[in-house]
Image (cartoon, rainbow, N blue to C red; front, top):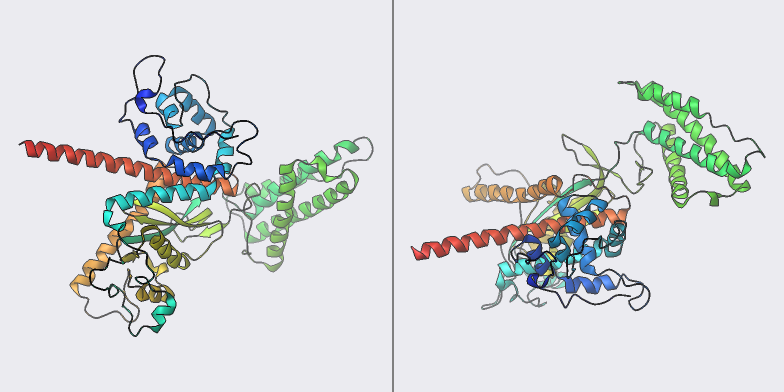
Length: 499
C-alpha cells in the first residue's frame, strides 16, 4: 500500500521540534528538499511497487530517495546513514518526516531495497529533469525554441537539399525564426572502479578451488557415516599456491605450472560435486553458493582455454567470482592502464553532469556521440553549437554527422596540418581544450568527494544506481554553490548601489 503525500510538503517552521525552536529555512538540506522534484519522482516510484492498495504501507519516495542522497553525500555506510538521520532533525525533514523522532525511521537493510526499487533508470530520469530545468532557467529563451520538424530536417530531407552547412557554421534560417543551435556539449568517458581486489589468474583459480571445497563439505554432510568424503587435497593445493604467491618475482614457467595445478584441482572438485549432486542434490547449497558454482564453471572454462592456447586474453573475461559482471576496462592511464568496473560516458552542460551511457563491457566511446547529441536536442529543443570532446570522438562518421547538422566538432580537421594556423583557430582550439577540462574536473570531484573512486555495492543494478545517485548528488551541490554565488553577488550589488 502506498500513500500519496508529496503534494503536502510541510514548511520548515511547521516541523515540530520537542526541544523548542524551528528549523533554519536557509539550511542546505531544507533548500534541497524544496528543490528536488518529489512529485515527478513519485510517479516513477509507484510504478515499481507491486501493489499500491494492499499490504503494508510502503515508504515514501522522499524517504527512499532522500536517504540514498544523504548516504552518497556523507559517504557513510547504510547503517551509519540511518544513525545520522536518527540524530539530525534537518535530515529527518529532508526525508519527509513531520516531527523529530529519536528512533530509527527504518532499518538499515532497507537501503538495499531502496536502491533496487528506484533503479538506475529512475535516478537518471530524475537527474535529467533537475538539470534540464536548471539549464532552462539559466537561459530562458531555450523554452521559446520550437522543436518543429521544419527547423530540424531529417536525414532524408538533408540528402535532397542542394547544399549542406559546414562544420562550425550554423544552418541557414528563415528571417525572424528561433535559433536552432545553442550551448555547448562536453563529452568524455571514465571508468568507475568496483570494489574488487586486483585480479590475477592464479588468485582467481585459488579462490574458486576454496569455494568448491566448501561446497563439497556442505553437500557431503547428509552422507556422513555412509560413505567417505571425496578427497580434495586441499592442504597440498594450498601449499602449492602459497609457494608461488609469496614470491616477489615469478618466472613464466613457474606461474604456468602453478596455474596448471590449480586447474587440475578444480577439475577434480567439479567432478566430485557432479557426483554428490546425483546423491544428495544441489538444493543443499545456498542461492549464493549455487550462483558461485555456475560462475566457477565458466571461470574454469575460460582459464583452461587460455592455458591451452597460451593466451592471456579472452572475450567476456571474468575477474571476480562475487561480481562476475565486472570486466577489465583498458584506459591507457599511466597510473592504472587497466581498471575494473563500469565505463561511463558523461556530458557536462553549464556545469551540470548527465550520464549518457553506462556499460560493464568495454566499448568505443566515439559511438555514443550521435545519441548524446540527439538526447541534447530532446532535452532542450535544439542542437548544441559545438561538441567538445577528445580525439576518440572525432571519427569520420561523427564529423559528417555534425557537419550535416551545423554543429562544430572540436579538434583539428582531417588531412595534412596547415603550414600556418590562423590566430583565431589557435585561440578556439585552446578555448576548447580549457572547456574540455570541465569533464576531467567532474571526474576528479566525483572520485574525491562523492565515492566514484570505488563502488561498494555488489549487484550490477545497485551499482549503476549508486553511480547515478553520486552524479545526481554532485549536481545538487553544484546548484547550492551557484545559489550561494548568486546570493553573494546580490549582496555586493546592493551594497554598491547604496554607496
